Length: 119
Image (cartoon, rainbow, N blue to C red; front, side):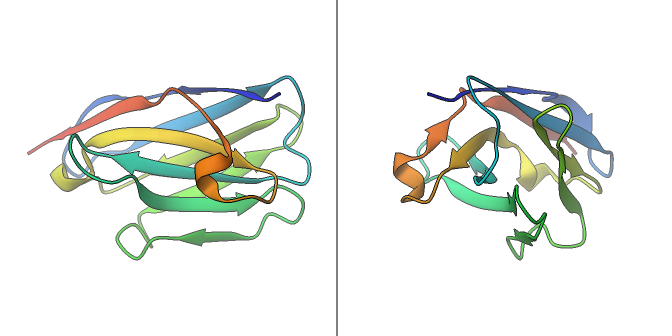
């Protein structure tokens, strides 16, 4: 069992940065793909970024490429999402998920952290 806890959400002005972190307890992220998703009320959850824990390879949604960076800290067993040049449309609840090789819907999910970008 993997328990994920997100942190770092909050209120930021447009153009500003914010850094989210996802910490795991219960086991390490080894062999997992760890991703960030976001969801607005009444909308489907949207993929933001993901990173392979084993080799660090990452991929991003087109909407965040060049602005967001996902990274891993092996010693701390955490995954971070550095968000720069934030836009009001980035306002959402952000979720961390750890995927051992199944459909994302069946992965381990955190409780989410609110990110609000004011214009």
